[in-house]
Length: 275
Image 1 (cartoon, helix red, strand yellow):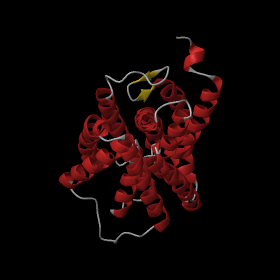
Image 2 (cartoon, helix red, strand yellow):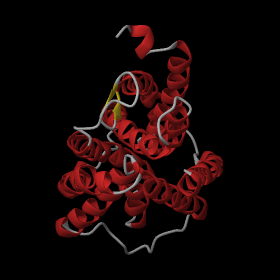
Image 3 (cartoon, rainbow, N blue to C red):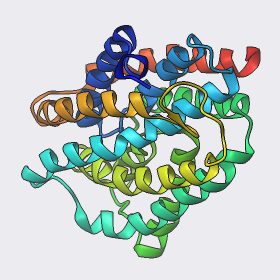
Image 4 (spheres, rainbow, N blue to C red):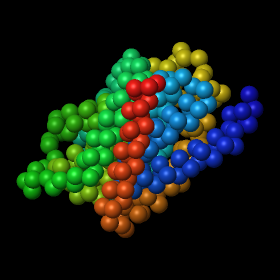
């Protein structure tokens, strides 16, 4: 198998553009980029002949695997600014790892691709609505103690593993609901993306071990050419997004991004009902 069959120029161009955008958004919002990557990867894989249900699963698994690299780059940039709440990371990471592994190795393999597309579409639409609402938390509310953080982490890890997201669309609202300042919540969410991605990717590898390759470079649920190109591009952009998160008022960007999410949610819901 030669490099040209693994990395056709058009595919590389598509994946580079996707990786650059996902990396910047990962640093800016602490989201891991999965909300953007999964619909576009589903489209790319479907148009290369992958069966729709399998395309959704491969997009979710490949998206999550790239977040391992994006998270490392993003959290390094946030840590330099002293914005990561490592006490929250220690409290939530064990539950997040357990939830991500349970989703990746268990529920993900059992659910049909159309069902996952439906879950993803509804999840993204809900996330976009939460971004637009911008409700203020009660002034007295604080982060729960470690059992509560572990329980919250388990739920965040499980849902993230099902939809291929870094968890930011759940962990950032949860932390801000508990009165963690937004810049700390975004930075801490970037750090929490690593255990989510590691656990879920391990689960996807186990769940898809026996699958025949759907495309050149596919290994089970993972599409390795996309992993290589997107990871390289997103890692280069994540620090720029993190820098922008500390320099910009992101309220208008969040509204624009929420509109994009509604469009992507509609596409995934269409795949769920027509695929």
